[in-house]
Picture 1 (cartoon, rainbow, N blue to C red):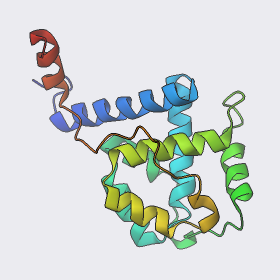
Picture 2 (picture 1 turned 60 degrees about the vertical axis):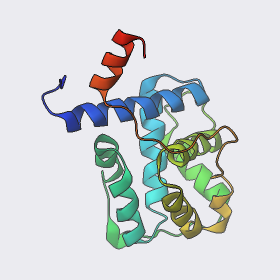
Picture 3 (picture 1 turned 180 degrees about the vertical axis):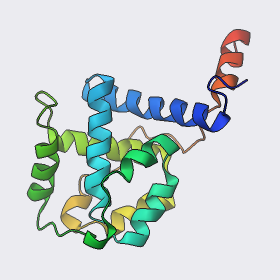
Picture 4 (picture 1 turned 135 degrees about the horizontal axis):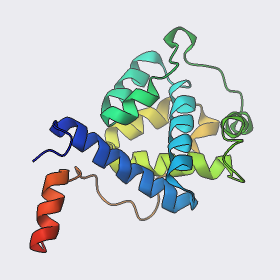
Length: 165
């Protein structure tokens, strides 16, 4: 049974919460900061990609995350130029100034780890290959990356917990 009336809403909330939990744990931050990190890094990655690939990446994101991904999107300005890794990290850092003493480089890596764990490997490879070379170094799969899997539906999770499965 759907908690919110539509399974699609339940799935996107469940998946988004799972992503935020992973970012929160990796960076040791609260969920609000994790949301800020996720949205900021996705915007900066999106803006470095060709429009078609950016749209394809967006289509792979959970519905709720997809909404923030497209916030303030200006495809005519893509891909933006970024001359160095330091420039990219600094730009992310500017958008995270209200997120206490958070290292923007670690924030970028945390989001890339989540994307690597949850998106199809071929999609991740395409996105990485189209980023400027200097930025690609931040996107390496963590050693503990499990194989991609679909998250269980929230109703199934509750049933599994109730039955001990």
